[in-house]
Image (cartoon, rainbow, N blue to C red; front, top):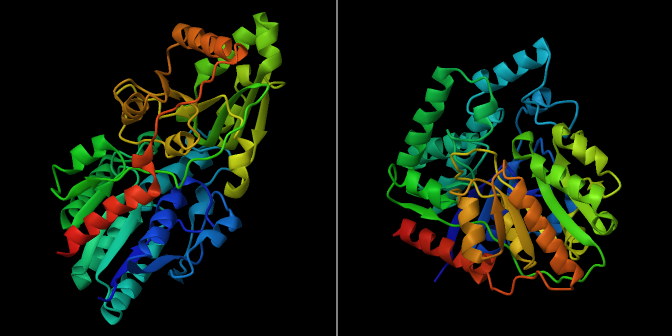
Length: 418
């Protein structure tokens, strides 16, 4: 029996670095065992992070097609690469942000839409593609998917790594009411048109099920469990991107206060902050006071990151600071789980992130305003560290292995095709 032909459209693809590329790079590689896989991606990317070593991880059986387009995104970025540019002062920056929010719909990759829609529709018809998959953000991919579905009637699976109209960055942008409504309209239209919808969090699944009954949850995950090693230091590690809306201000304050009165703690404390950090984090008063304990790392290539953080005592995870809860689970949570090390997560108690920490029994959850309990908990963790009491998590998290998640994905593909 011949293999079915699956086409994946993803803006983020190697050499893109960061967490956004991992999901479909891993899925595409696994799907090659049972399907013929073609990936369409951009030839003219504007990636915030680049990691050329990821090119080596692409399965040779995958056919990659790259399509160029005009990329205006660089114009909207801050000169400081670690800033999210939402709180930039100055009239010119405010004008840029307003233009970005209201004149580039659904995002600054809008110039990719027509070219990819036209090329892919033709490609699908000429190459007997059985099903195509889009993954967003950028949300332009959903418009592309809608166009292709209308033009070809090919089976469409729409993957949402983040919510669309409720996207956390939209909440900080000067978006007009009409633009907000346009996002909601297109979100509804795209969801309604897709044959199947995939999301990465339970809350978003429950929300999208109201629009499309074929909505399924497939979490992000990890490829394998990683090796760990013991450290003589009390190592706290954050890896990834940290926006100002994720800043755990009380953590920096608590760590400094403990260090200032506990010489042993100050001597043992090491904080590794790896990745891209908003300027608000870098210039935080307590972060600066802790500078002898903190080391910032720029983006670390995936092949080197495992070793760098293998001696972690406790991982730090930060959701968006929103008391209403969140329908977005940071992808790094799953990467942390692969080390079976303790996690301190900053999020609201009713968020999907909190639920996953509690479900896996992998750490403790604190809201962003909780200071006293956080301090007591860190002191308790440090006490256990000094007693050489292991903070490792013994539970298995096999359900989040990419191999098992791909099985779930294949079931969705089969159901979509029948």
